[in-house]
Image (cartoon, rainbow, N blue to C red; front, side, top):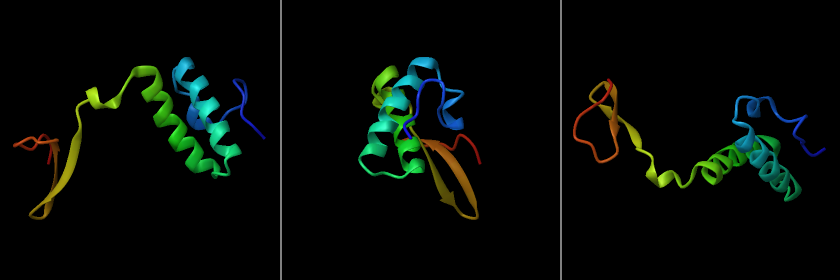
Length: 84
């Protein structure tokens, strides 16, 4: 059964209305193509945010790396750890 603006997955409830509506549209298309619900929800959420807010290339990217016996968080191409 396709999702609507009044009946959608719980994970869509905290999305901005315009992002939610686009996510519903994308998720329904993915379901029609035979994708399972979990995959459709995940892809639709990411793609709807990208569609509404622009390309994600503008956002700062972070990466987690193992260092000795700890994990550190760094900006992509950064030299210092932000969090250990």
